[in-house]
Image 1 (tube, rainbow, N blue to C red):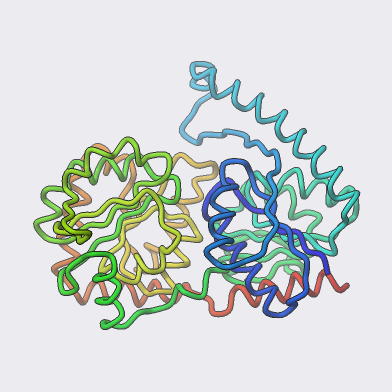
Image 2: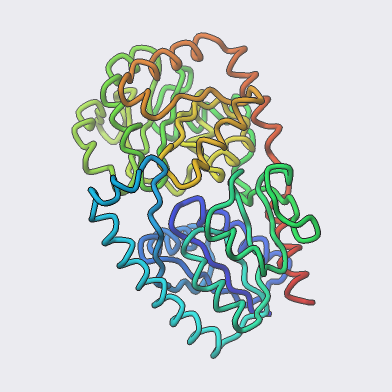
Length: 390
C-alpha cells in the first residue's frame, strides 16, 4: 500500500501527521509512506522523523499562501505593497507546486493521500482531484481555512478536530476524529511532573510556567515576557520556547539563565525549539500559549491550566474563535494579543492570580480535558485506510 501524507506551513500541520504515520505503521507495517512538506518545515519534519525513529522519505513541495490579514483594509494593502508582491510570488509557487505534484503523482500514484490542511496541501489536492486519486482532508480549527474549504468539496472524507457542530461540512462525509497527537502527550502525576522539572534543570517543588508561541515563535508573547520577566521570576520558574524565527531577537534574556558545571542555577531557561514539548508541558504548572488547535489538543490531552493569547491577525480569526470556544466552556483564560502587547502587566496579573489559586488551575485543567478525544490518530488512520481500500 502506498500512502502520501502532506502537511506544513505551521507546526500544527506537521506534528499531527507524524502521529498519523506512526499509527499507520502500527496497522500496516509494510506500507510505503512519503511525507511532503514546504521548504520552511522540511528540517523540522526530518528532525521529528529522526527523533521518532522513522525511516520516512521526506520531500519538499513548492507552495504559497494568500496573505489575507483580517485587520487590513483595501487601502492598507496598497500601503503595504510588499504584501501584494509576496502574494504574486506565492501564486507562482502554487503553480510550481501543482507542476511538481502532477509530475510526481502521475509517475508514482499512491492509493490514498492524507492532507492535513493548510496552504501546502492546495497544489497536491488539486492534482489529486485531476488524477482521481482519493484523498482525506483533516481540519483542526473551529473555522475552516481557505485551502480546506476548496479541497473538502471533492474529498473522499473530511475529518475534524472539533465536534461537527462547529463546521458546515456534509454530514455524509464529515467525521469528528479529534486531532492526532503523539502518544507521549498524556496526563502526568505529581511524581512524574517533579521528575520532568529536575530533568529540565528546575527545582521540583517550585511552580513552573512554560511559555510558547509555537515552533516559529510569537513576537508579542516574547516581548511581553521580556517586559515582565523580573517580576515573574519572583513567583515562578519560567521556561520560554522563543521559536526558531524569534530566538535571535530574544538572546538578551540569556542573562537571566545561569549555569554552573552543566547545571541550571537560575529559575529561567530559554529554548529555541523543542521536539519534546510533551516533557515541557508535563513539567508545567501553568502554560502560556497561542490558541493553535494542535497545541491546544496536546494541552487538553495532558489536562493543563492554560492562558491563551490567540493570534488575531490570522485569516478567518480562527485562533480567536478557537480561544472563544475554550473560554465559553471555562477551559482556559484568554488574553487579547493587542491588549497584552500594550499592557504586558495583564499577563503578569493573570499568572499571579492562577499560581495562587490551585483550585482554579485544577478546574481549568479539568474543563480543558473534556475537549480531548481519545484515539484520534487511530480514528483518523481507520478512515484513511478505508478510503485506500475502497
